[in-house]
Length: 146
Image (cartoon, rainbow, N blue to C red; front, side):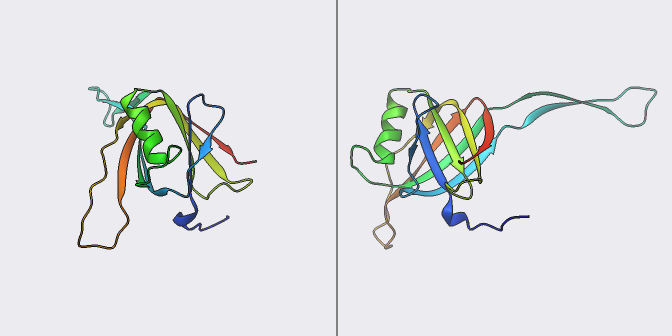
């Protein structure tokens, strides 16, 4: 078993075509994967004490991605905000252990950014401005970095 791995080394990449990805680890603060639950059915019949369990389709993948607020044209926030406002279909790639050869990466998409609010700040802290956007994707696949 390899690991454990520090969460501080993860990678986030975005793509508009599912092939050419741009890395944004330097601006990514946190990622929270979710969704993808498979529907299930539970059916009881008179002649059996336990239910029959069946499965159905999976729900969409949902990723909350927290990023630093930066404003350069190629920065993650402005890219994500533009994709959100223009309803641009994108793919997200997440590498839990970072962009390291042989380590897992998960590609999610195609999908849409369904929320991308402006940053909120608190003058009472020394924290950098950050915000969270929501990406909802149709499917996911696993492979490894090469």
